[in-house]
Image (tube, rainbow, N blue to C red):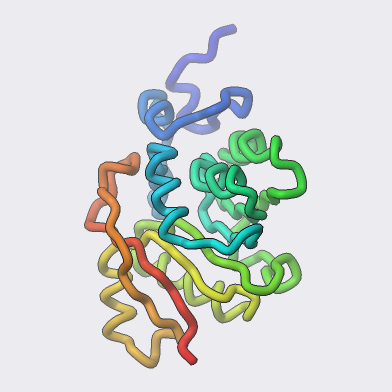
Amino acid sequence: MTRQPHEWAETPPPSVVPVSADLLARAGFDVRSDLGQHFLRSKEAARRLLDCAELPERGQVLEIGAGLGTLSEAVAETGHWIWAVEKDRRLEGILQAVLRPFGRQARVSISDVREVDLHEGLGADTVLLAIMPFDWELSAALTRHVFATTPKVARGLVVVPSRTLEKYQVAGEEAGGLRLREVDGISRFEFWPKAPEALRVVSIERRQ
């Protein structure tokens, strides 16, 4: 029996690969606002973010909110090890299918990152590379959690709402020992749904 588009509102079929953000939009996928959920629309944008990250050869990457695996796949295609963490169980089949061809080079966890043992699962000098939730409070909380949980995450490159960056800059020394620096911008139209405010591509480093 043919699946009707509205049936995707709850669970997109894992057998359909690749599944793009635009396809989800046309299918009426029910975006979870409580997760600050927005999906990257193009692999070109993912590759630009990867270039900004300046990852070391064969480096390790932690991605939060992996979604449809657009950024995850771009990371794995360049030979880096990727741990993709995604909370929304509806996306598990899609994410697994995207990363399955990379074998042990890619790991998928369907969980809240705050409930994952990051220290046990990561190697030294891991880079956080993520499109953070577009809820600035949640985005800031997750960033602080990752860097406070394990010293194995050495630095990061994230897409965050402008307010997240502004809050960290105001906090200064109280910002969890982190230094955030804007290195690029990205259009709100690169995402579905369109981001509700301006976005920043931000480098994160630990304060010495």
